[in-house]
Image (cartoon, rainbow, N blue to C red; front, side, top):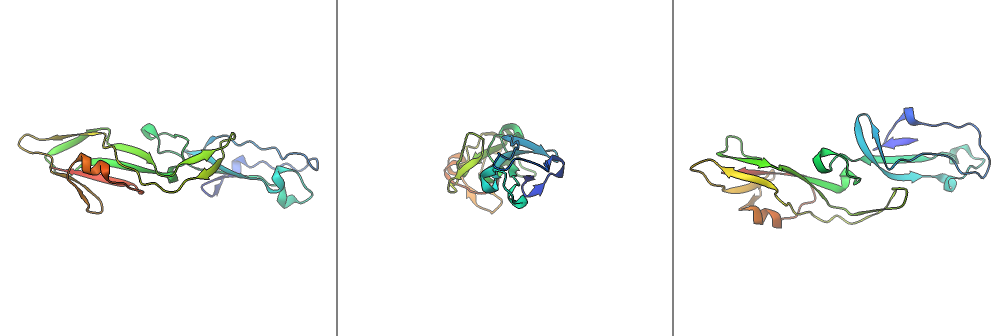
Length: 178
C-alpha cells in the first residue's frame, strides 16, 4: 500500500496472491514520488514480520508512507518533508509607498531529520525556531522611507536586523511599511 499523507493510491497497490514462506516480500519504495499532481518524499515503511512472508495474510502487507515535499528552492521538492519546514514571505503594505522585490519567499527547516540508505526517515529532531534571512530588496518611493516590518500577528520589527534576530516555528508573512 502506498499512502500519501494518509491517502492511499489504489493505482499503485500491488497484490500478489502467492509467495514462498520465509521469503522477502517484494516492494518498491522510491525516495521521492508523485501523487495527484503533487510531490512527496519517503517517510517510513511498515513491514510486519520484518517484511518476510508468513502464513498470516494480514502480516504480509507492506505500507509505504510518503509526506508532502514542495517547499524547496523555487517551489520544488528538496527531500525534506514540508511539515518540518516554515516559509517566510515578504510583501509591501497595500497602497504602500514602496516595494519589496527580488527573493520574496524563503524556506527554512525547523526540524532536522536523519535518513537511512533507503531514504527512510530514522530520526526527527526537536523543533528549532528559524531566523528569517530577509533576502528581498526594499525600495521606498521618492519622499518616503522604510518604517518597519510587521507580521500577521501584529508584531513589529524596526528593521531587517530586528527581523533576522526573531525566531519562528510557523509560516510567517512579513509586511514592509513605508
